[in-house]
Amino acid sequence: MTKTITIDNGEIFALCSLLLLALTFSFIFDYLHFPVAWFLVPLLVAIIFSMVKGKMESFPHSFGMVGQGMIAVVTASHFSLDSLVDARHYLLPLFGAIFITGIFSLLNGFLLCKIAKIDPCSSFLGSIPGAGSSLVAMSEEMGADAIAVTVLQYVRILLVSLIVPNIVGFYFSTPVLGTPIIESCNPEICFTPTNELLITADLPTSILTAVVKTVLIILTVTLAIQIGKLIKLPSNLFLAPFFSCLILFWFIPTTIPPIIFSIGLFLLGLSTGIKFDLQTINKLLKAVLIEIILVIFLIIICFIIGYEFHQITGLDMMSSLLGTTPGGLNTMTATALELGGDSGMVLTMQMVRMFFILTFSPFFAGSILYSPHQNN
Image: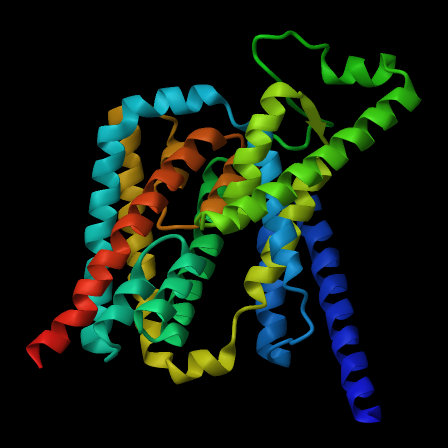
């Protein structure tokens, strides 16, 4: 019994150390105007921490859930319904971008299968760009190697999350979330500017309104996540809060402090980085090394696709690049919010790609899985 308590205390100390280190370095790099510091710095700190200490059993899984929910709420407050209307003009180029990305992803899966000797179904599911958690769950149901799929998917997510925001942030470093308040409102109604509202508003009334709206948002998000589970909504922890708050903010205009966005990024970065399991990766070292090369190659291809998308549609370069990346819906949307891109369009492009992937992947993976059985 005493041994168990000692281990628990050690785990608690490790968790507190991780949080303290991540917070300290996040503040430092944010002060130095490092792009998307509140996501990338905790991500790197958590990766290094997990490599040094090993898997942390006591790390709260709720961190990632809360982080995704916070980012989804802020994204909904920025999302314009005009983006959906504008997206219809981009459908043909978007389908072309999704198709080309899919072809190169299939090529990556084929190369993984041949060079790293991973079974075809696992290499295919591990190479699909987007909806990583859904594909991992799907792999278990389809009889693929869930561990291999998990490692390959999270290597891709980590590389995309590290490389793309840094490159885009380097060339388009114009953060917009330094403003005091984020305003979300019905465009048909005219509201007082935020700063004037804060000065002239009655303080007790403002506090009461903020509390009521906060409770309403929490209840709405909680209910939406439960409904999302019932209908098996993909990326439920992000899309359910997003869709529900999008409707809520349309009817009830809401001001959201930018610190909510920073906290969401911080929690998401920690929860993503802590999943980096060095022991598991050592078992699949050859596949991981090949995957790193293939993902970097895929990122370069997607940058070229994004540039061509920008040339064809006229959408700004930053949003085109972020919208055509190989996955990372949460991170790319957060990066667009942070740097002043069209986050609504980025989210729309990523969602269209993700729904195509989740719709057609089971059928394609199933044909790959069962064709060897038929040959035998």
